Image (cartoon, rainbow over all chains, first blue to last red):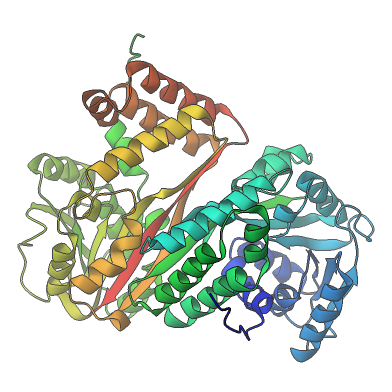
Length: 277
Length: 277
């Protein structure tokens, strides 16, 4: 089967879907009360990636706030700076290269330390939580959110979509030492305890992402078809023998058909924790 | 194995866990804007059961609002009236016996028609949605929420809890003609379309229920252990051969151990729709 040309920047789509609004409602009340006491908040975004979430967080903080994003990848840092420039936020957001296990900041430096869909990629997520607590000021908080892929549901349950779901879950579970796995969201509480936080410092919640409008479904389907046709998922699947080229094409077509229906939707949960210091 | 005496009214626990706050946030903004225009709102609660949700809805409407609950079971009606009396809400909430397929009300009689975890029990849920739209005034809305059991996640994934989850999902799927099934939440949109609603009248959302605090976990575990030891789930499982007495006891013990841990939690999604008329 021939590969259609995918012109959309896939990674960008996935990253742009993450905003302080759709992925940060669990910490907004706490942030608002800190902001009321002191509008000059400093927020650290750990694993800041392409910077979209950092910029969105800067907007949530308001003009007096400052965001620092830290990421291990120099390419991500330069891309994130570009994004901040394009958004006119270069004075309020800075991105620095650094290791999440050894954050390049002093103790008690930030009002908020935040991470979104980052710990799933790490082997010792509890050590990163301890680092995030270390750089947070007393009176501040740590806010972490991770997906929980096993909770994902889709309508209609077409065979191509079920195959896709199984492929992703299998790949994540295979990788699953430490943070990896298809069940990361529900592990934030045990990880925070392992990091040394006391149970009464921790507030747990579960939030959802869902896609049901034509615009959102189209974006999601484009990202997923890109992942199987030209992206990392397709590559890993073929390398490990988890799926054939035909399987992958069936999955891609199923996503396109899903996006075109008016009765289709997809939803999944994220685990969320706030750790007060 | 001997059966311990369960003194808690199980059904009551499950029903009391449902409130306008934890199960109705998806329609609150719309309700608030209707209420601002007219505080004398009339709300119909379809499948009102033991009345806890109806009373909670009456509180959300405020003193000028009125709630009518309708249920097929005369026992539920008399229980619900008792609950309303105990809450001092007898002047603001009424419960009447009636059939959801043929609601005993005129067209355009209510500002809001509401149902929570009701359609999953019915064979033709789309016909009930059409009835709910019929009795709703132009300018009002229909609000429906149903669980989606397949999305349920639990930590830690102890064998007894996984067995329980599988048992419930199998029992629901076996029953699954019409509304039944372990995937009801995601079907609200297709059902509303089948009921004749246009796509642009319908707003979809997915909400979560989660339990992580000692108090909530204890309530949930009591309800679940009761279900397997002395309740409907245990009865069905033994009758159909889906589980032995030993399996059921393993599940009950697993729930008790789950509730006693500080790192455990459970979460599941609900599908939600608003249909504007």
